[in-house]
Length: 71
Image 1 (cartoon, rainbow, N blue to C red):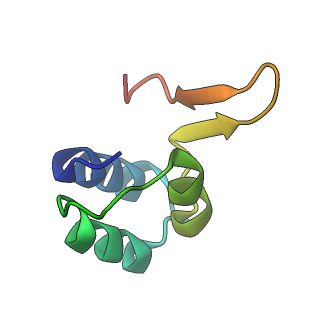
Image 2 (image 1 turned 180 degrees about the vertical axis):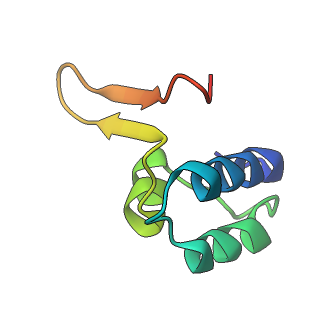
Image 3 (image 1 turned 60 degrees about the horizontal axis):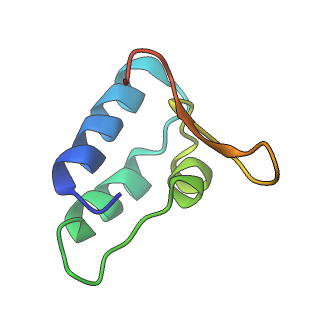
């Protein structure tokens, strides 16, 4: 998740459908997105912004999944 457009899309989706979304952290990520040194894992996105559109599970049957509307 390094692309600025991806971060902006996820932020807009979360602001529409998630009342607990943290817009301050989203703005920080949006400003840094697109820089060469910027990388963002789905797990960090979920934890810092209280996102509900992505689900990240670790372990044997883990993976990263998106809410059906995001696909």
